[in-house]
Amino acid sequence: MDSRPVLDDGAYVRSAVQTAAKILVVGHFAVGKTTFIGTMSEIPPLRTEETMTQAAAGVDDLGDVRGKTTTTVAMDFGRLTINDRLVLYLFGTPGQQRFVQVWEDMSRGALGALILVDPERLEESFPVMDLVEQYGLPYAIAVNRFDGTPDRPDEELREALDLLPETPVVTCDARDPKSSAHSLMVLIRYLQTRIS
Amino acid sequence: MIDPGEQEPEAAELVRPYVITDGRVLPEDDRFSLITLVTASADHEQRMARLSPEKRAVLELCGGGYLSVAEIAGHMRLPVGVVKILLSDLADGGYLVTRAPAPRATLVDRQLLQEVLDGLQARFG
Image (cartoon, rainbow over all chains, first blue to last red; front, side, top):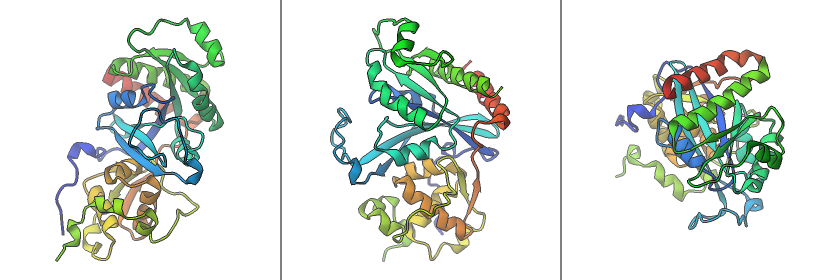
């Protein structure tokens, strides 16, 4: 039988790994989710596309993703080996209310969500925040700093996004591994406070 | 003559998803999550002759080690829903070994969260 290797060894989860956990990295279009996942992933990020039913046709807010049909929705994800027995997956998708199936799949069993926001386009984050809340996921806000973005006072941002006092807000640069990892750690610490 | 083993998963793009799954839809008890880890069972190669090209492709992909359901879908360029059905059939036939995902964050997950935190800290400082 055909025994050619299909993928490099590094593409596979290490054999000792017993289980996997998942965190969502979500936000509006072009906020930096794919960059964030690519920065943190140890494998080249992967994408799956789900074919949507007619109800999803006519989606007009995919921005400049030209040449793509409007009947598929993409989900990007990456992987990070945490230790010998555990891998962490990071999943990202746009916050589109119509893509319910994708959201159900993604959110099931997730530890929590990191919501990336662009300080200049805060209002575009509302739909995705609604979805995260609807699926009952605890979340932290990561303000992705683009070059030349003016610093916006934390209080102003909290008020604009209508955050609970305990919801963490962290600034990050999705291109920088250290900074991105830091925002994930802020989320994890927040999740820890919720169970203690 | 075409060797069935030579067929590429890309061929699936030319076939409508319900053809690949023999018209089946996902069973109600959804036993594969996106992050369920899957590999081919040790004896899978002896029993591949009657499988569809897509199922063979899944087994060839999984033969190298563990991958999550999402990764299998990504590498095969098939929708997750289709891949879950293929995996479900293969699991019924004893072709797969799976490792379940960690349970959702609850009191029992204190250790899991600490592990993730420590792991990130160790790698990224």
